[in-house]
Image 1: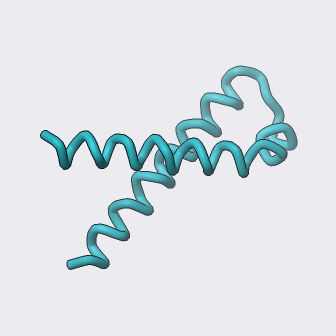
Image 2: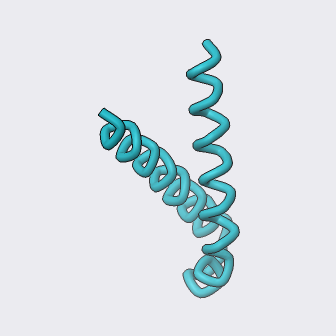
Image 3: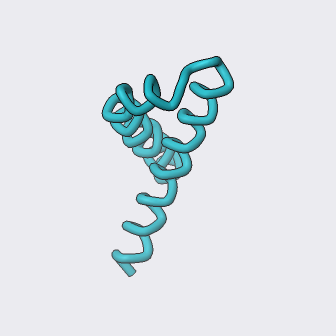
Length: 59
């Protein structure tokens, strides 16, 4: 059961990363610029996914 929640957490983080990459590209950034910021994008996605998970637990 724990593996289910870990996979779900990883999926949520991956979806957030892809959303942020798409947004960056649609705002005119190049893939090189996105790649340079990938660490920050992944960190932000992890925070957002964690906050959303906490909101679900608290409801």
